Image (tube, rainbow, N blue to C red; front, side):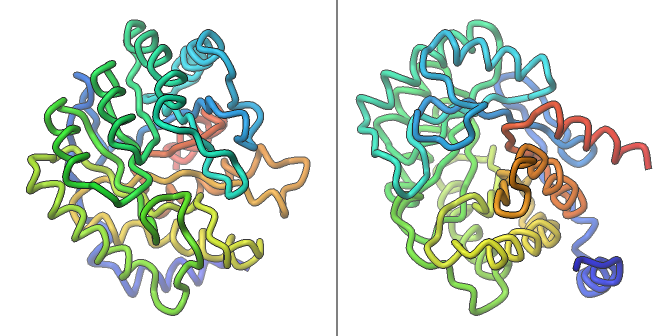
Length: 295
């Protein structure tokens, strides 16, 4: 059971880190003030394999309509994905991803929405940036120099996801042998050095809590890990860049109320000082964040 004493102990052990500020920047002409106002990223899934049924859009028209609804509900950015990260999901080649993504990007940008694209493919990244995408949600590590150069050249931003493998579809067991925050700090430090060497300064750090590692299939083990990382998020902000979290589901615990899982995790993420909330449940997360501001 998570207790008030646990939160007090966490703060006492890391008090100097709790007030660390992060870099603020503009995306697509919109300035973000992460130190005073967290942002929300709404999800549109263009893959039929995605399990979160409410977010799936199988036509460009449906995807554009959902993107506009997400903005009206409070999303600052819309994140598009053409390949599910589920282990059993079909892989989608570059051509297939582009055929799904590009028409939606163009229409959403024409409607003045900020657009993020989740991919680890250089060819897909290039095509999406040229179509107007504002942010690369990078779920891999291969070819990062080339990807960072492309993002910087388009004055776009990147989400650096923590991936123990060459990409999100090629992960095995998660190393649970030590403090995950220290391993993440080392990983992000290396990635930041590479990104900044390529002229990239608009960067988010994402601990990758939604990825499907083999040894995190046990729900209690996975959720315990996710909760600890959420609450310890502020320790990564000392690297100087805002933190993005994809909010998970814990459907084994929530069952028929699975759509309430992301709002629950949003509370923990907010306590840990998350800067960008990636969610399928934009209005629920917006309500959580607005309510927490009242205190």
